[in-house]
Image 1 (cartoon, rainbow, N blue to C red):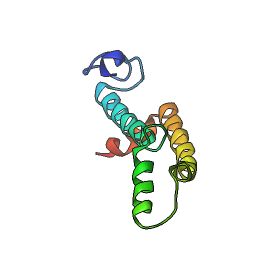
Image 2 (image 1 turned 60 degrees about the vertical axis):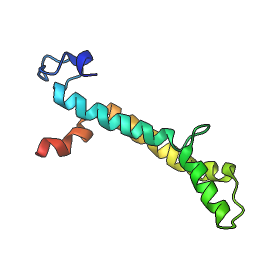
Image 3 (image 1 turned 30 degrees about the vertical axis):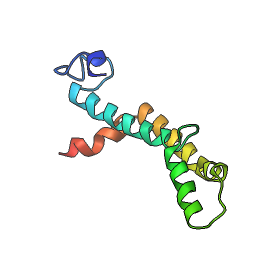
Image 4 (image 1 turned 45 degrees about the vertical axis):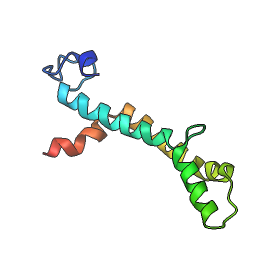
Amino acid sequence: MVALNGGPDVTREMSALGMSGQEVGIWFGIIVVKMAELCLITPPIGLNCFVVAGVCGDAKMDIKVQDVFRGASPFFIADVATVGVLIAFPQIVLWLPGLM
């Protein structure tokens, strides 16, 4: 992403994405983490959902994996909306690092 923006030493005015090289690195890192979170609650790989279903099975609760995925669907929608906002408005991601 830094190379697509113009390199690590590019300024905001000269960049393709409107961010400096360091800002693009921070922004892209946050997007990668959010996407990893999203992947951990979606089928077929939804590892977190399988863990929750396994723990509930050990606790003698009768909860199926499908029920856990159904319960995680509002969080999936919220994460998709969050990623969309972070892509549309990268200044949100860069506000706190900009204070340092």
